[in-house]
Each structure stands twice: as C-alpha cells, then as structure tokens.
Length: 112
Length: 116
Image 1: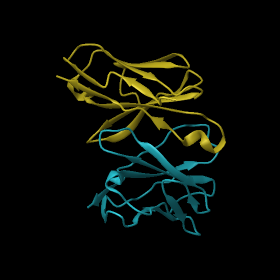
Image 2: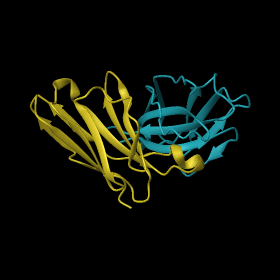
Image 3: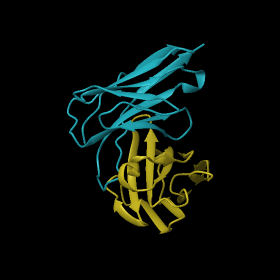
Image 4: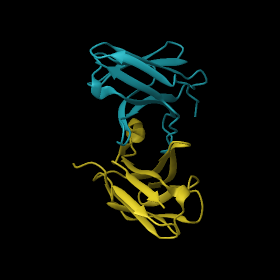
C-alpha cells in the first residue's frame, strides 16, 4: 500500500473551513484514499473515501488532485466537536485484505 | 444497531494475571479486527478475522496473546500472563467485506487496559 504523509497538527477557527492535506505520491491506479478521524478517548470513525473523483457526504468533502498524488479533506464549517486526529489511508481497490495502516495523522484543533 | 460493543471499558490488573477482552461486532458484518493503541506505537492491527476464521495474525506481539471468534457475534482477545507493557487501549472493529465497502471499518469504544 502507498505511504501517506500528513502534517502533525493544524488548527482552525470555529465556523471556518478546515482543509487537511495528505500526500500520497506513490499511490497506484487501483488504490483508494480513505479518511478516518479519532476524537479523544473514542474509537476511529470513518469519514469518506474516493478513487479519483471528488467526493462529498454529510461529514466532509474529499478533493483528489488530477495526478492523484495528494488529496485534501475539507470540513466546510468546523465545530469544536471536530477537534480530533485525522488519518489519511491508502488502500488497494478490491484487496481481500482488511488491513488498514493508521499513521500518526493530523491533530486538528478547532478553537472558539 | 448499537454498533460494535466492547467490554469491559476499563480493566486494571496485576502483572501475571490473565486478561480477557470481549467484542460484539455489528450484526451482519463478516470481518472483525483487533487493534492496540499506545502513545509510542500509535494504532496497530493485532489480528483480523473473516467469516470467523483468523486471516492475518502477524500483528500479535507474542504467544501471550491469543484471539478467538467462536461465532459471528462474539470475539475475545486474551493476554496470559499480562505484563505492564501490555497497558494500552484495545479496539475492536468490524466491517462487511463487499466491493468498496470492505475497508469501512466501524470501531468500538475501546478497552483501556492497565497492568500494574
């Protein structure tokens, strides 16, 4: 699986958009980008995933560059409850293995 | 559905004692994962079951750790004997392996283990 690189920490004002970058320059054509987050003292939570098209759901938007070497998770109106560690993970499409590699992620702090 | 249910939420034990962590996956899911999280090593996969069969146990640290899944609705992770370095938060997750959805794992609230 491709390795990902994320900044260790970011902060954002409440109500503003939080843009979390992820670099996955060695990604292959059959690898999806997944985002999870972990709020303090809770288990990780799935947010969104995509292959090459931009994706949006009720939680966030995922923007993947045309060359697929990087992506950005966007929380359009961050709230204090969005303070968490955000993990970007790349997984092979169609793989029979369930293994997910969680790196160190990005600690997002949303301040009032 | 109540989600993935883990018990106990907290466990404090003494070195050398046996510890059993329990997990009930989401009904209908066919895969179950045990993870361990520490400050030093982050979140690491210990073992993964598919249709109750262990598929990948390469993350199990040593023979003191064992995991079972006797049926689709229950799994245990056992540490015998426990050591202080086993202190960590242990998470269980489940998923339904089917196409894209196979990598959407749903996590329990975790068991915080302290071995004194």
